[in-house]
Length: 559
View 1 (cartoon, rainbow, N blue to C red):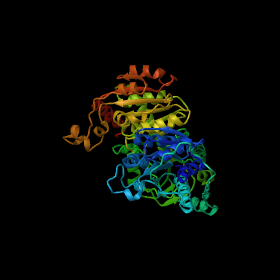
View 2 (view 1 turned 90 degrees about the vertical axis):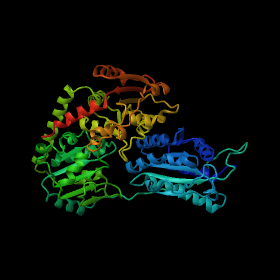
View 3 (view 1 turned 90 degrees about the horizontal axis):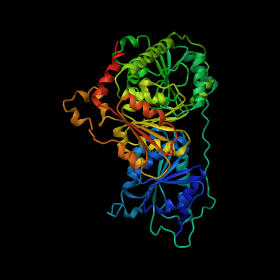
View 4 (view 1 turned 60 degrees about the vertical axis):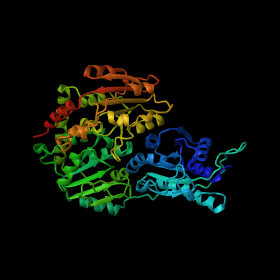
């Protein structure tokens, strides 16, 4: 029995440019699985663990800049998508979640694999749809086609993000002998998005306001690599003298003079370094920031104005001083906003603080004991140009943000929700969907939490993984509060005895273990060379020693 209204979902996805579907096997979802697999324009990958599947899809969509479809069976399967869907929602990555379901009359009747799936992903999807149970009536078929088009349009409209289509299916849903899946021409609803251009009058009003403020900074939150944005911002900085503060996940580290070490020199105890850095106007773009020091500093310093530039319908008032939300493409804004040259003395103070911090960090890393901080610096130093760096949460992304980056490397991290789950998966998705070498730096907890991201037979030869193994969640030892508790070891540090060696064997990784600088340098010599399979370096260290080193590092700026 060919379910034409189900096949139409696939046709609509293909018509909107979907190239990849990630499917976790199940019986109720069979009509969807068979249809996606039969369509010549869509590549199907099978990932058994739904949680990992959703993060892999996130990584692929991040690279393709197109929606990726996720298909699962009914019951708890769709709940396992939730962490990645929340991440995609806040990173504004387009995903099309299609969950098979029991017919509505069987919900709450204690039937197998039957839960309340309608709207199950809540507020972490841009839209949620219930597909028609049957498509036999022309109006029902038209309704289903409209839903599929609406879902694709919603996912791709700014801000992009995940959507959910819940598809109830009645038996029989396997094709009979001799039946073939066909994809007749279907209706595709095209969406022409409004072009948000600022008027000449608006730019003049902005220039008039700009002139009222003496000290100005531009802060870049998480942003996808964008050469056009980098060029526009570099030209703007050169024309106006405005300082640019870039976090490592902002991907603007190649702009000459961009400040990169603010997380180091904005330590709360660094009173001398903070003198004269308070801005009157803060301009922000992008999404989340890593640096708590930067966020707290700008919240406490009460700038006179804060402009946020974002082609989105979400207001970002993270510093609590927002005065203008400029709904525009940042590239277009910086190409067309010409306020003229400013007094650059304020900007030179920021650049001087950054240069001093950079020199202090280099000197410290050259002489400090071996631990995670030095290991991450050596790994970043060894990264090949024109590759990708993926950073897991907890300390990996923080170490990298302290160290900074000066190479032509794209940087990604799951900072939408900042959870440790899924770092492996998004890196795997990136390695499966583009030609650049992908390096993931991760902690042991994040790595072991997402081992199923490797549980498939797809080629991961472009993937390199560096695991910082301190046998527990060492980040809490570095945070004031948890570290001061008498039951810290019991309540905050998750002791685990595993090493990555067996995981490497299970998934055919080339494996090297390191516990000192000499062995790490030796392992890095050939680490990025092609070998036809993924490679993994495991760096062992002690949590308490890492904390001692990090505390000494922070003392460099406590003046």
